[in-house]
Image (cartoon, rainbow, N blue to C red; front, top):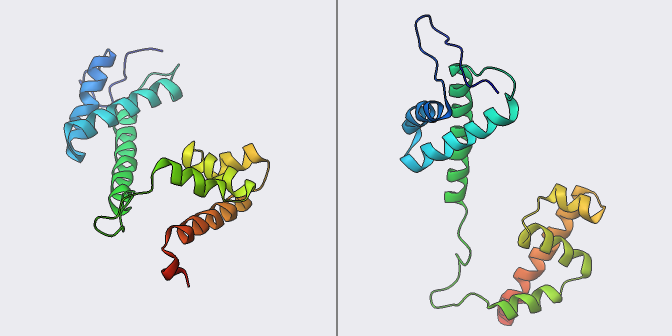
Length: 164
């Protein structure tokens, strides 16, 4: 892949190596947040350049637009993570999270198909679409089984007096 970049404005010097590209992207990305976020953006941009522009010269404009798009995606993910309560949130003060043996027992109580879906999507981190391919069923069936399983697990978690 050619490391030279075409200048978009007359007289502008294009970066000639990866370190210079990285420095330019980090400098641009700092406006979106801290140094760590800027480094994450720069790393993702470099990966995209390697993946999608392997045999073409890279323009500064491509780098900036890619950095902006990556920054927007990462910022949206951060906002979404801030809105989602952490595991164990919503428990009463002093109430402990279930231990591993309890979780295994609860999972074992689920029907096989529901347990497979929960294991693939929650424990192994597959998307519903990937789980559907692995289990040879539709995505909507995976979604329905996962929802039913999670509702059953939540129902089993509540004290018996609150279930009725």
